[in-house]
Image (cartoon, each protein chain N blue to C red):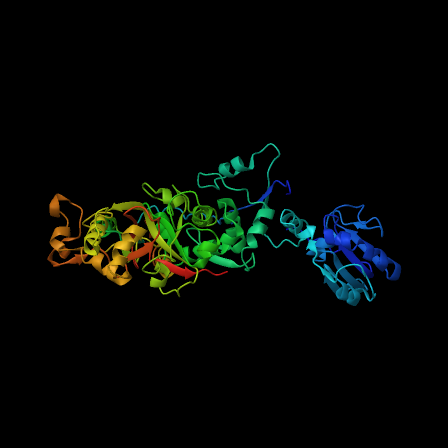
Length: 94
Length: 483
């Protein structure tokens, strides 16, 4: 056999596109904030509390829901959020 | 990418390729001298440059003539006109040699026919290297040179490409040999692999199969498993992201499982069989290295399970008294197939005393009821891997698959009041609303699946518990193996 010491890259070899985040807004007043319910039990209780506080500081809140917590949000839903909201609160808990 | 080396042109006239280590080539040595007197003849020798003594041969030392002109047998006789082969015969066959060379009466003292020997250019020890050296490599993966002082096994650990066990270095020779296991082109897209949603090619799957330790004949099974895992129904993304200890469990069936030497008997769910141990592992390496699914990143399992290295076994479909899981899922009998199931490790159900089917069904049900939590029902599927001694209890009583599943399920119904949160002093359970239900089954329809594996000693069966089922989580996916 050949003694070559060259191997093939087992990874996807992809180049990850990095995009800069928008600057954080100084205030949420008048901005539309998206809250995405991932469909875990009692997630709605938590989001209700969050909505109350956001409305209290003058934000408009739009609520969204994934069909199941086990799968990524459908592309149409992601698009909907992106055109309807200026701010999304992203967090993860289990 | 490597460029192909141009095929060397053959001289016009008669060309014969021989090797010294071939009795038929020795037998025709005199015929070559007869030919040399009557036709323009060129002899190439593959191994010993002094053979034959006359006519003087050209040494095909690097086998480039043999490889490029697809010599599979020696001797091979070609007639070449304007650099192009127009006739060919192999071995010694007097009439054929006359037809190709146009010379009568050759080898009068030889028998009419004598088969040839294998060409060195197709020697299993050399062919992969020759394919890489001369072939137009169609492989597109990035080449990574390993430094002289570097250990390639350690280098692959360092780069994060392993599952914690050593992997076989995927050299081009090994990957090309792996690709002989399929008729598919290396550039074919097999699936889009989560979580990074990357299109994976047959080539990258072959790289993972090499690393996992597969043989080429396992590759169609690995490709089919990758396809099945990357469906929306199976939801590989969710299997990674979940905190539960699940991974893809591969249940294989069909004559192909025996052809590649899979184990469906003793220790079928354990170690020691190459196909069982490497096919599931190859799938997991694809998910890790191509899809980017790694523990601590998208893989958020609280505990994980040993099966996440790779969990693959064969059903004993020949001796199963109740057919296969694949047939239950709509595949024709005797068709090679894989069922992918989102499952955790195994749990043994011991019942060494039941000789009546209903008694055994009750025991199996008791074990199944406890799966994940006795009070959590309908949310998880399971595979029951029944051992031959348990299966015989049902078979002797004339129970088939449907009756076994119905008989077990009959003992898996509990009133909602026993399952709700707080019942039995346990906070865990179903929401209050289920409290009124007179009876709730442990499994949704089709959620309890049956397979047959293990050896003939031991009144045991194994439960492989599942994960969130149906549209919420994962559905079992069964696919016929594509070759």
